[in-house]
Amino acid sequence: MHLPRRALLASVAASPLLRVGSARADDRTVTVGINVSLTGAGAEDSLTVLHGAVLALEEANAAGGPGGYKINILTLDDGTAAAGQYDPAQAAVNARKMVADKSVVAAIGPIASGSGKAMAAILSAGNLATITPSSTNPDLTNPAFAAQYRPAGLPIYFRTCTTDAYQGPNMADYMAKVMKIKSVYVLDDSGAYGVGLADAFQARATKRGISVLGRDRVDPVAADYSSVMTKIKSLKPDALYCGASALAGIKVVKQSYDAMPDMIKVGGDGFHNVSILTGAGFPAAEGWYSTIASPHMLDDAVVQPWIERYQNRWGGLPSDYAITAYDGALVILQAIETVAKSGAPVNRVTVRDAMQAGRVKTLQGEIGFDANGDMDTRPVSIFQVRHDPNYPDGDVLHQFKYIALAPAEDS
Image (tube, rainbow, N blue to C red; front, side, top):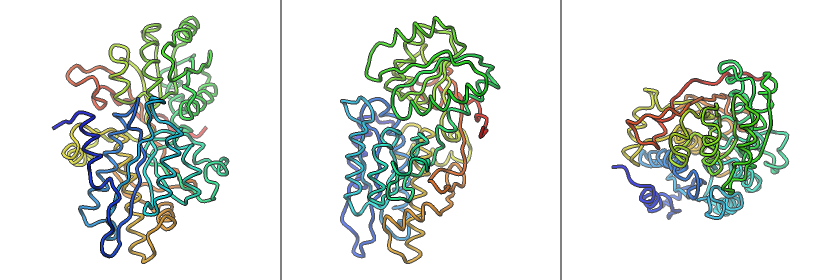
């Protein structure tokens, strides 16, 4: 049975696994925090991420727990009604809550890079490692910014996705080589994710000989983008590229269609979600290209049994980032088991070290991490919205058609 979003949220909130419970008699109980954005734009997509992570933790508990440890789950929402989406201030509050709870040995999330930038230094000070399924700003794991985002020294920000150092540039390569784009106009939404993605795309596009005719910033909470759309229309670029989360992205999709219905339009993973499909609607969303910073696994026969388990537990289809969330939980679970079997105490320091050193078999394949917490693989997948009336408009799996892996080049 497919539950509506409110019912799903209620079912998750009611789960006893989401509350820090009493320890077992031998005190072999630890907590994993999950920070997602369940309020505002993108909430439906965040819910699939939460469900992916929770599924892995529930399955581990049902099998006896990693190393015999029971996993309790502490779920925190960094979205606020005031922000209309993720809120960095709330993310910082959530980070402090997780650090203050001494039973929390690792965390999953956040969804958004803006939240990650607000959380990272707090988590570092508390020696609490987190693993994000979808926040892609490269600064968070760039050693050049270590003093800002990991002031305690050791990496604490891990990913089961790649970064915008590849997501933006690899799409620029595809646009130049395959789509033969000669000119582009670039937009961002002023957030850490949107700006970083647009910057990386623009630099590579220029290097590949694509003429960047202009760059503008849209306000996520503003309603009217008509002036910038009029400007873009007058310049007649071959394509529009936008780095933005869903709050701004929905309006960009709607208003760019009104002004320039036939222009090629491209965005990052902020445009690859149900919010774009249902919020902007059709025909506005038709034809948009998007990328995700992970392999596209949902059509792979290997993951079909997992998809069945996901549907049986939650109803509805997962997303590719539900897979990376599940994989992130597997990384933590293996780390806890490794530490427990070694006889060392299961705590934040030992779990972080085991995450850093481990190689883990996940749904997307075996993964490990470099010295900064980034995956040692860097896939970027390309999609295009092609409306299929046989499925609901908000069906991400069937409305976003997988095109290819973006070219993987380092320069």
